[in-house]
Length: 123
Image (cartoon, rainbow, N blue to C red):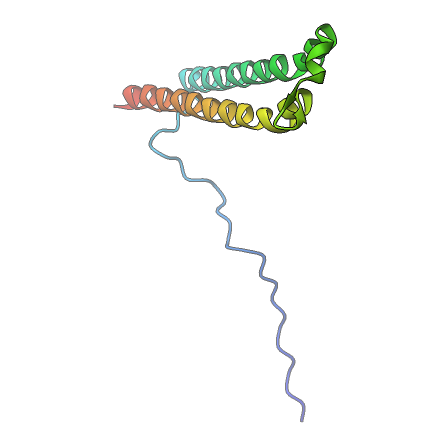
């Protein structure tokens, strides 16, 4: 006699909730005021991101123009490496880290302000 074959079960992850839990700081999205608060937060985050990208573009994209306008700078060496390579290969990374750190601090501040505003409204 043969034994019955076991049933195959596919496990894809934890069971999903049908509706996400609302936290105490979520605005009522279906109210006009909650929509205004959320739109304001999103607008501030977009402005912040645009400013950070603009600073990055101005500082990094202007380097070719600087070396074109002052061709003597391309011959300068820093630690045995030409200045353009030193700026693009080394100096850009601290700039990126600084911009990322600044963006993160400001974005968190916007979110804290938003959370405080929603809490005041609810409480």
